[in-house]
Length: 445
Image (cartoon, rainbow, N blue to C red; front, top):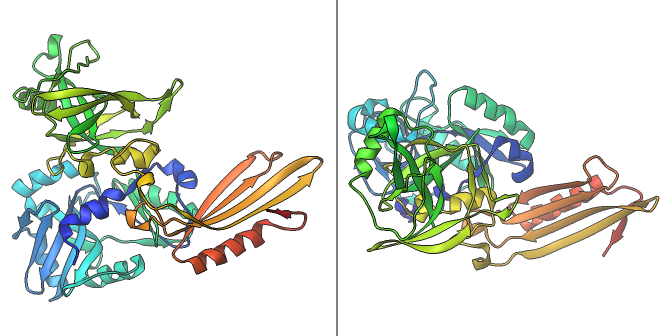
């Protein structure tokens, strides 16, 4: 049986962040997609031995007496299982809640916590291996959609055009965003803005009338267990109370560094050990500017402090805002790593690259050309087996359709579709050809 402690690394950390306006461009189309609310909390696991229930997090911490467990025991009614979900602060008034509120609730107001289940790990001691459809039906039958322990409602759709309206409804209802799960394919996170978990590398104290407060923090992302990619400086979103508390916390954590950076008012950042993870929000992430790829310093943490390793390809954050400290996160690649950027913009160095995976296998390719008045239009269909489905980032089979029509308003159009089997892929291929290739198109090799 797979340990629930590895679930975060295998599944939850591989969600692909995407902005709502990019759904039609960057999200694959598939025949069955499940839409649900993205609750902002902590990944947690509900355990039942058939008699009692308890909660754990991915780090192994256990809670035996949370009020929500009474609801879970009553609903599971003797079923032994392990369920994955989001431990979060419930809001009857539909106000936005945040993951960094969970530790305070655990300590001071546990009755405010709720658990929303979205996956099944095991039932009656046996590993659960089933489609999303079967998984959600199982969760609904065990927990229902109400109470302190509940199954997160799922909406099944077959077109990307249905995603936007559902997302708007969820956001207006006060939730963080939306999760889109493709049957047999990747899982996406949709938010009006992008959230990142970053490692705090340094801080700058304010000057003038704000002396005694934090001005900015210097943040980065974990490349590996001892290497950090500098990402940028963040000062927005910090309340006066936060500025005072964080300064008091960080001023006892100084670290040596052969790299120096200055803040917006030319005060040098004081470097600190990479032990604190913060959640930030930004409007977008850019991988390049007018001069090309964005380069930022990369630092190696050693017993002597930070050593400057050189400049590396990174990214730029648009309008970053501090949201809170994530005490449930660690400064590691799985919690606060470069993979977050890789999934947004691609092309960045990380500890896991596509070149290290199995190569894709071309299964079928057809090209059709239509010529009119000396101008050629091209329609190309390509189907392949990715051989990368185990990574969690790729579906098993992919169909690509490219339509190049020089005289059209949008001369180049592309679309991607996914399939769970080669048989289904071939059917989709034939359907696409029949739909898009009519009289006048000549097949080319």
